[in-house]
Length: 177
Length: 279
Image (tube, each protein chain N blue to C red):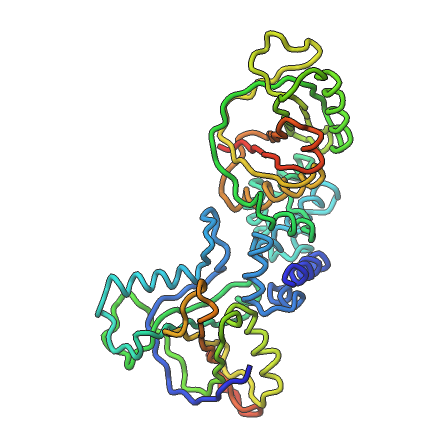
């Protein structure tokens, strides 16, 4: 897996957030975890509130941000934001949350088919990163889904992108988010 | 293979029950990234990694409470709880009672202690047959057979079925049931086990046998596919994973296993039904 290296300006996202154990739901016995449910919640909002989120950059692109910390490592929790990118921080409906990601360099990986459900996090952070000349710049990464992602039932024809914030190895750290 | 990776994490938990470990360390032991590990672990174990770790710690501590003279506060710290209060809360959440009451009470009910899961457990449960029960109202029925207090399971139960077979030589096509009742303190006393066949009326039953009437019960019905020896794996899943996750509560300390009409075949390898009465 070879990434493209790109510089990105600040990214402004609007959407919903989940913090906790995505697999801990009791009783329901549904196949879907909390992150799937987070997306359903966001989609339902978008359908029910057509036009209320303005300045959307790309109406086909969904962003899933995973943030990690000592707390997520201790308990296996996930800190996840699901939403869409907007041009500017204006006219944001009260019901949605905003996430602002700093300007940074990203290593962008395109994952295809089966790759999307493998342990690509491990491949990126433990196999690619150590020999890349880069280090992790921030404690989050982005999964970007657009029209190329057809869903888990059509995995073979699906593609997604993973954005990993990086800096040149040896650079002064920017600090945690 | 993910099963092997998850088993490495299970071994890691056992080796570190009293150490300060994070779920991220379990993921390292498996060789997975954290999120992928949590997803895979939950998919195979059906508890989340953190839940399993806590349940294993609480279950081992529950043994120590009754088997040793250690103080509760020391046990709490041994198993990495921050304070006796956190320990009590977690303990109560899992067992429905305080550690102090549990200690006085005497013996832990092993059915509800989280077993150390093995590869065999994971393989068995993930064949998928027993994963999801059907909740249903089971009609009242009668069985006739032999019943005794059984200590230590397997052999004594097999012997009971042999005795029953002798008595029922001429009976054909009868539904066979194994019924277990767990009295309080069964870890010491043993369980009541009845090997029996379903009967319509009790007018002409063999006077040497006992008759038991089971009232109509709301039950969770599980399928067990495999041998009698592996029934333990299904029961561990029912009591230690399905029960706490489903939020259901047991109505009686009773298990009913329906073997079908050919008990000897069913004993070796078959599809059995396990009924657990719920509230």
